[in-house]
Length: 162
Length: 261
Image (cartoon, rainbow over all chains, first blue to last red; front, top):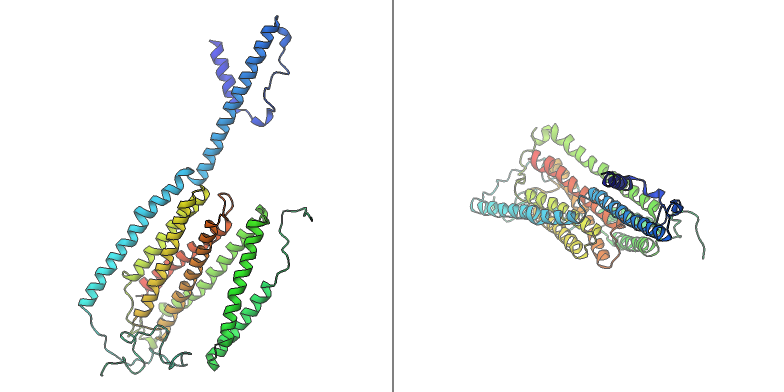
């Protein structure tokens, strides 16, 4: 009854104890009172037992710490190896289809515009088509992205009889 | 071999700050000469010198960091501060143009017809190309995040895929915006509406081109094994810049395209 409990307590102690205090492989070999054993065989057996126990507990300790470190690292990145996959899925399932939907919407609207196009009437407003200084290119009268079909010059649309 | 007893980077003497300053002088004076005397000589020289300066200066930084190991953690921290401060300064740059837009549009002057958009201005439909542009930039924000996590997990092929997709989306935005500029029924010379629209969106477009170029350089570096899963600050800086560009667009879209229409 006390065996498993002490074993469990020893396990908990090892799992939660500060690893940095232990150095080397077997932590108790040098201090264990081996002289308590009657025979050398018993002493050898106990030493091996402790060595094995020490090594197993060290391994358990090491692997649990590694897992903890991995877990905290993944927590920082959002589950480690999973995060890149998550964003890849988001890219192909949400982001790119969103773009595709907007492209479709645009295509449909363009068709609608082409069918119902109304030419805007030209009114020579003084607050528009300002030419206080010539543009530094061409004849100085057309903007950089001038489009004769939609951009009127100060005296009217080019190529339209008004 | 000399050793340093500190973790910081004492940079070797370099000519590129001087050539950069000369380029700045040539660009400014060259622009003035172009406007008044219609000569492009100084401006062209300035552009060439600027490109040479940028190429060689940043090439040297890559050499110092990736190949010579000068970018220790404290040095990297300094680079992070630098990039954050630079992006902050860019935020203030755009704030000015947003100020100009809201100044003109919240209280439209009588010359414009006392309304916004001004009389005679046919605005762009915010739910056509501008909406598509928004989707494109938001999508590129997702793909650049995919690229970042792929780098951190050592997924080489996925990083290349994600980065390439981001850059393509950036090019698509630039292409769409160029088309919009050509098809717009108003120009930069159409009063304060045209000025605020084209200056704000124009500088934004320039930043998209800069950001796409930065990401393209990162793609080349990734292909050439410059980045490790722990140390890839060049990429992080490019990603931060790209997110900044995306955020500026969102403000532009909501203010100028949507509210201002």
